[in-house]
Image 1 (cartoon, rainbow, N blue to C red):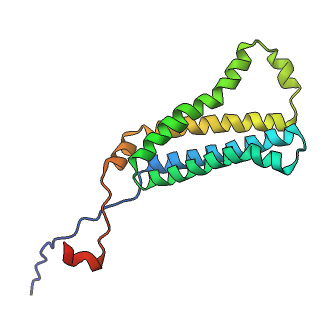
Image 2 (spheres, rainbow, N blue to C red; image 1 turned 45 degrees about the horizontal axis):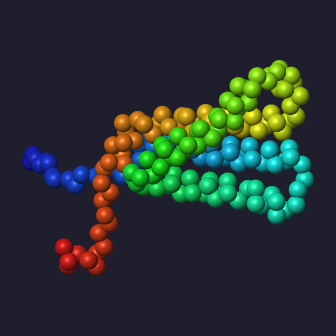
Image 3 (cartoon, rainbow, N blue to C red; image 1 turned 90 degrees about the vertical axis):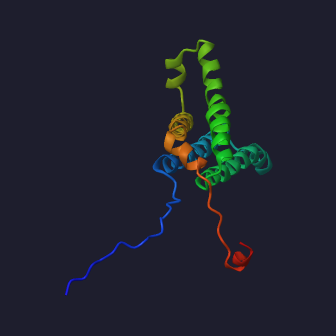
Length: 170
């Protein structure tokens, strides 16, 4: 006896996971946050001992900002288009400018770079390395956020979850 297999209708499986460009951008932004914290700690340690209140007041605005950025990164992973724009403008524009303005002004003043760098302590080298990693991670994230796959991801509508108790209303 011969059995004939007929095709059956299958439900289309929707993959709601973010594309590689979004995941890699989120990782790069997380690396930028860690590098920013390392730089801040290196600069604080370089400044020498201070009382606890002064240290907290110095770090609170930065930590608050980093917390907001972490929340926005998470929202990007949940397809929030506003999060993409916030990261591009806030981190890619304003944040990048804040990272490069001081070094550009310092370089424009015409310092003896060899003399200055030769006198750096280990903490100053750590802060410079952390700033470099921070800036590189932000630039990589911006490039990834501008990829077409990222834009397609945030443009797709989120499918609302259907609650079984509300099925009678539909």
